[in-house]
Length: 376
Image 1: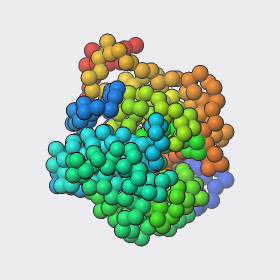
Image 2 (image 1 turned 90 degrees about the horizontal axis):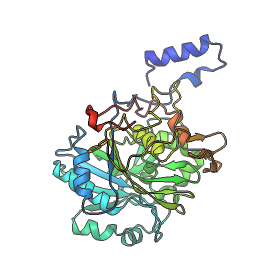
Image 3 (image 1 turned 135 degrees about the vertical axis):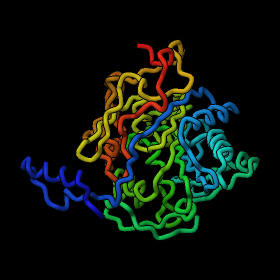
Image 4 (image 1 turned 120 degrees about the vertical axis):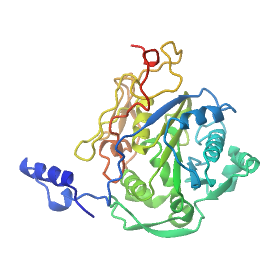
């Protein structure tokens, strides 16, 4: 582990200010700084699950400088359980569209992999959720990460205090790992998005259901350690129908009509949180994240956006989160309890460690013309 000049200056500033800190507190808990220089996010309008997703997603991916030619791509959806009528899983049609798109981009192989956190019978979840037939028809390989070959892997961050985890070989050998979460609220962690989605790579056959060791060690800290060790290269978040209320299983389906793409999971999760009315507050002592514009998505490229677009959405400026009281304040300033004794995942976005990339102000992927800007 090495301490950069920036880390040294932060520690020196804290000491100079008279902060009562100890040397271990100042040392970083990560092994390397993986933050990209710039983070790219795109929000795609998609009002329903249909065959058109193939075209919509392909157009969205062209906005990013993605090179997967000759590489193994692993798609990691959020496949938790099956409850009829509940929007708890990443929709199979979106996963199918992603697989086709990466194949067209020249991927050597595309694998769908997941380790459901609640239902132990993975084949039952695949069958009931519709995944099994779609994957079979398109000859897409599925790997059950709960029972995949495991490799003892040293963690590349130490927020939980754990030294290693046994992780699936399929994920560790992937050239390009794509997190495909369902945008949902979560009764313990506030929200469950692309980083929390990585809980599914921890094998239940070794650590139990619902991945008990991660909850015992703390959800936020486990997210940091896990994402530092198994980096997410790209995010495709399913917000066509999201979930609000008592997620991640018993919430209420909510039509959002959006797909969020990003080359940075922190940027993706911050954007998704703001999209559903939850404000994230970066802590500049632990990240160089700058606040995302609150009022409109004028700083995020939306393909096909026009000033006369009928489905314009503003981000509620009054939405926020209080991690100390574990409540989310919605746009009407009504406090809603969203988490349990573990605290709130939103704190991860507030004090994200250097082991993860951070938002360096979400840039435009390409300059918007005057007729493409968000109407004032």
